[in-house]
Amino acid sequence: MGGSLVTRLLQVQAPKVLIATVLLLLWQQNLSFSEEGRIDFFELFSGDAQATQYWSEQGFRCCKMDVRYGECMDFDHSGCFLLSLHTILNEVPDGANLLAPVCGSWSAVSRGSTWRTFVNPMGQQAFHAVSSGNRMVSRCVLLILVILARNLVFYLEQPAQSLLPRHKRVEWLMNRVSYVHFVMFWMMHFDKNSPKRSLVLSNDASISILDMGILTKAQRESADQIETTRKYVDSQGYSRYQGNALLKSTQSYTRSFAKRLLEAYRLGRSRQRYDLRAREKVDTTKSDRELFEALPCGDIWYESQCHVAFEYLYSSKHLRIPPGWDETMQSFRQTLLKEVKKIDADPEESVCI
Image 1 (tube, one colour):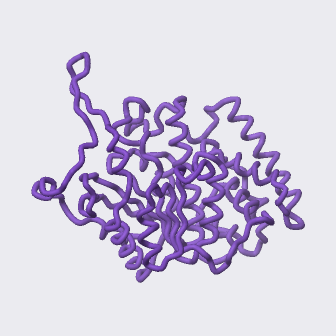
Image 2 (image 1 turned 180 degrees about the vertical axis):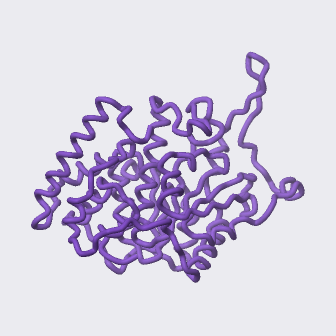
Image 3 (image 1 turned 90 degrees about the vertical axis):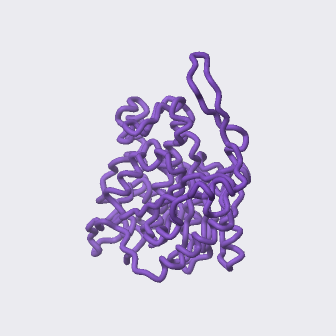
């Protein structure tokens, strides 16, 4: 995929608010960007960072982010979203990205408290945990659009029963933008002490090697399993299950999984990839500014709060807008603020509800 970054973002159908945010990020004088790339592997929501540790030992230059490292790495905050964008913009060609959004509100266990169903995957958005989960996934899709525009690789991991693939932005990505391959597998095949059926979505078909086959009864019984739930009977006599303190430990990856993922990545690099279902037609005779001005404001992805990140960068003292772009950005900002006020007044105006 050739051309400027703006052209490539247009080809992957990136919303105008994301393109504007990426440009403002590139125009920050206190940030550095490398054309050759400085990062080979980026792990977002890394937790114990077993994958980062293993890939680093194999000679890859890695970056990890997780809220447990500090509040500045809380992906629910715009600062971490921008930091993630900065990381992706500094990756080498064919760099790898492992994203594992918090699955708490997407899992089968939480269906009763989130009101998420297969028919209504977005859940009750008046609940903070639900709106936060939706926002994180929308932001992940925005990151994936930049990943696709830069011809990088993404791996999006979730428990097999997660409703995350039913998120409206994820479905749009899979059905309208990119060929997304998926594979289900048992984490116990990778030395995990619980079976944990898992799912990975990727633009690289080589993830199929993560599937090591069925998990036999003998394998289940031979492993030193941990109990992650407790069974109890409620006041009406129904059997219920509740996660215990050990459930969170199943979120961590093992070195065996990291090794197999690296094998898939190396296999994928040896093959030709065809990521996009269809590239948007872009007039390459026009400049980036002319292309940007001609693009309608459209859907601002309100639920992702990308407009908040845009405003944060626009008000930065380190911003240096190139000559000729001042009026363009001012005009877009005014249009964006009008759209935000319209949805603030009537949330039903939001496309993703």
